[in-house]
Amino acid sequence: MSWLECDTTCSGTRKNVVKLRCKVCKKFEDKIVGRRNYSDKWLKGADSVRTSNIKDHSQSDQHEHAMLLLRKEQAIASGLGPSSYAPIVKMLCELSEDTKQMLRIKFDIAYFVATQRLAFIKYPALCDLESKHGVNLGTSYRMKMQERLFVTSLLTLSGKLYEKIYPRPSFFCSYGWNYRQG
Image (tube, helix red, strand yellow):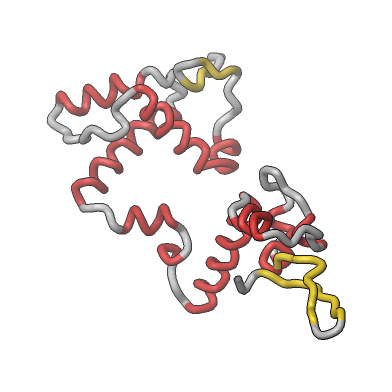
């Protein structure tokens, strides 16, 4: 594990590990400080040197994000594109053209629902209308929970840009975002 750094003490001919630190988390400390369950224990040095603690840290949200940032930095330095460090970009690049076209149409419908400030319940009806007009949408993201997840994910991905363009919703109901008119 190249990300692991340790402090040791010597007692005779034997070395004892006293603290473990994560070099990657330390490097990207400013970018991971707000992550879920953030802890600076591995930045300052963890006293517990058990294998299970190392495994737990390597699977933590903050470490995984730091590793993603490291892969991104290395890819950019090597002149590689986002598909080398961003799993969603890699997955999208591997989709067939038909699947990409179906996904584009669903994005358009979800975008229309969001920008027109329609209740989320309109998304399935618009998908059905497109299907009646001969547009092949496939079956993914056509069930209620999947549709809600799809539109909510789009809103989350657009993040701050979306918030700048469109005002915050007045409340969230079980069908999705609803806006107060007027």
